[in-house]
Length: 359
Image 1 (spheres, helix red, strand yellow):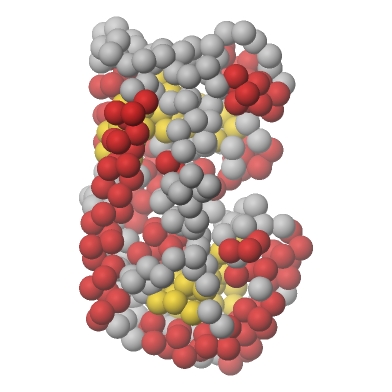
Image 2 (spheres, one colour; image 1 turned 60 degrees about the horizontal axis):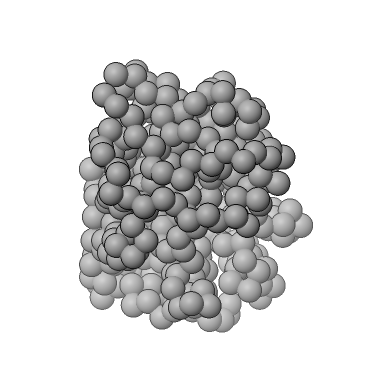
C-alpha cells in the first residue's frame, strides 16, 4: 500500500529533523511533500523540489500522515497528525504551571512519537489524562546520522564548538563578557573554535560574532549540527537543546549560566573562567563522563540510527488501528483562529477525531 506523507515545519532548524524521515519514506516507495507556514522555513526549503507552496496545495494533497516538527498544526487538513518534536527536552525553565513547556498539550495531535524515557513517562501520564492521543516511544529522527558514534577524533589542536539559544536572558551570544573572552582565546591559537547560532537570534548579534573569524575561529551559518558535533572535542553552550544532542556522543559540555545545576554538565558563570574550564573539560573528567551515561539512557537510549524507521513503522501501524476509544480533540477555538490567521485561510472545517485509514 502506498501512503502520502507531509512534513510540516515552521523554521529552518526542522530540516535536519525531517531529512532522515524523508529518506526513510522514499526508500519504501511512498510519496513525501514538505510545507512550511513561516518564511524562515520556506526559505530553507528552496533547495527541495517536493514542496507545497500554499495551504490550499496542502489541502488538495490530502496527506495520509502529517509529521509535524512544530507546536501546532492546522486542524482542517486530512491525515494522522503526528508530533515528532523540534528539540530534545532542554529543561531551560519550567512554565508558570511548573511543567516544562515541552509537555504542553495544545490539542492538535493524534500521536506523539517520543524520544526516550524522560519524555515518554510524562507524555504517558498526559495520555491517560486527556485521552485524545496516543504516545509511542520511537527515538528521534534528527540524531540518526550521529550513529554509530565515531571514535574520538584526534584533532591537531583541541576543537571547541560554541552554540547558543535565542532567548536573550538565557543566551551566551548576547553576553559581551563572553564575546570578549572568546575573542581573546581565538587570538591565542591554542584552540580551534567553531560557532553556530540559533536561526532566531537577531542578525546584528550574528554579524557581531562573525567579526571574530580568523585562522582559529569559524562561524557556521547552518542548522546541520551533526558534522560539527562529530568534529568537536567539547561543546560550550548555555541552555540550548544542542547540549542534549551533543551529549549522546559522551563528550563533555561546558554550560554558561544554566538555569539548573545538572550534574552531567560542567558549569561556569563567569567568562573570565572559560580558559581554565575549557582545559578541564578537554581532560574528559571521569566523574562527568560517568554522569553522562545514565542521562543518555533516560534521554535517548537508541544508538542504532534507526529512529526514523521506528517513527514511520509506528505511524503506518497506528494509521490503520481502531481509534474509536480516543476522545474528540478539544475545541481550541483561540488556537485554531490563530492558525487560520497565520495561514490566511479561514474555514469552519475541523477534524476533531484521530484519522483512520482502512487497509
